[in-house]
Image (cartoon, rainbow, N blue to C red):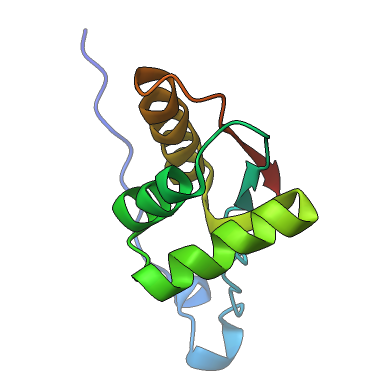
Length: 113
């Protein structure tokens, strides 16, 4: 014997007018956290290479790249960009790979904003 789905018939009690409807609020969605990509100073990586990395991987103008490179050189660290986790992770990996291929000890890391 197969079961038949139950059907519901609308009665007078089922009538709802607009004032009977509950107001639904949408849950607030949070923006994903952002991550700062940080470049660290060292005594061996040429300044010109750092400028090249900033121009190539972070799409900075020459002037922006020089300014950030000087901040890294003088302060020991600088934020080179703020991104979603995945993008920040990719940028760090690209910097590290490019530095490794050129045999520079340049370090790049990320931290939650």
